[in-house]
Length: 418
Image 1 (cartoon, rainbow, N blue to C red):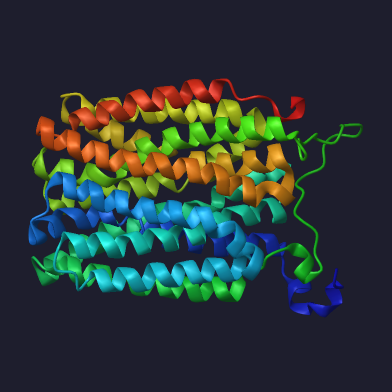
Image 2: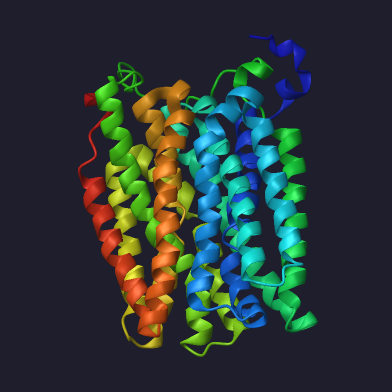
């Protein structure tokens, strides 16, 4: 470990450098997930009209992104082992930005699908190492809160895209979606440059120790962490966490991909109003990671996940049912309040169960199962919407699966007893 005297600028900072890593991680999530994935929901209505895309094709474009994401998760472990988390994140962001810029020139479904698979690969290559860094830089007492601040980036991106895309479409017209893809891609490349400058792989690179959080009262025993579970226990908890995470992936992506299209095509809202709702989701979501991640530090990951799934299932029911307009607003509020809570809790949970050295690998494994949920969700939802003539059935299905996620979270074991 190097001496802190070798890093005088770091020593003079009024805060631990771990929080700079959190800020850079937030920028990375803003780009790889917020822009690389969630911008699609705002871009689909105008792009779908311009390229004459069916609901099923829209679903497959979203699914293609998650196929690329899953492929990245399969290889990101060796990539991090060879290049380190920082370089892997920056490379992933560069791929996201460049592929999105090329989508702006696409002329049909096949081209968009192929390019968006590459975008998904870059998103996975950036997201998994960013979240894995939290276990290295933060102890268990503050791990959930730190991960929660990282995932704020997705909410900021939703707000940005919700305002940017309608403004560009109003200025440019029917082909405004092309300029939107180009501008968003450039924003992602800017984020890659920031992460290149700020991210560091481990506190020891700067002669630092992790942030451990406030000390407990005198005599308080140190928290017990299942840092080395038996192989059988490891397989069980990975499968359990993965199944819970997959329920989130399957459900939230249906809402995020199709809510704007449903508002515009089925509820008769103007695109600008739907964009405003999308921005409100982003604004409300800013607190979802820190609040619920921090809450899980206090009440446990199991209880935190159950609360979040209850909020999400209610949100899906309210938009699926033919209820008056105020219930639609309630759905948007509930979804926004908790949308990024589960990734922050899950990133903290893998650190609790497996310890910091195995956290990145474990998070990659559960993210792989999560990605399967994301792959299936949009494709099934799009096909259901074509068959039923609306997205209501897809949102109802999401509510049922969120209920299963609630039940799965309820049976998670205590990491201290593994």
